[in-house]
Length: 217
Image (cartoon, rainbow, N blue to C red; front, side, top):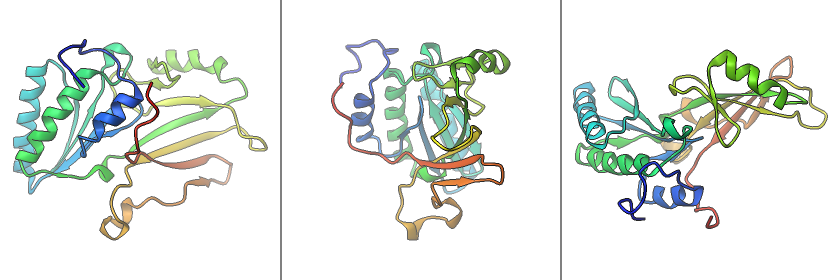
């Protein structure tokens, strides 16, 4: 894929993203973002890598969302100015940081990058959207998902209830199940895919493993 021949803010197709991620083993696609997590020997090395991220972001003119937790750095890349979509500039910065992390001896720990999103079920989802957009200050993407423009809060989407199941709230937890079971921390292993509480609200576990590219678009 040629980056220099295209606009850096062009939104990538799922096919282009999946193809690119074959060369970026640390990164995952997750609902409008590229996400990754890297672990370092100690917090000092993590801080040093943060300085590299800051320098790369300044040079690229594009800044990732960063979360530093002792010796682990969590990154999320998206282009908020085009509706929280993945663009060529996200891919360019992800590629640069992939090489930088390797040079720093970082260990990719994608299974630690977990997200929680919310689903409101209703017989008429369209009647609810504008209320929640106004109440939360969210923006709606082309996929119908409501997102925090700052990327700090859970995403929200709507669906109609399944046949025979009352409307309610679904809490979705996204994880990257990429390690053999014997190498995973027991607290990070995927559990049952769907659980119900006493009032019928649901918990759904989703995985975003790297798959073969979808058909060409």
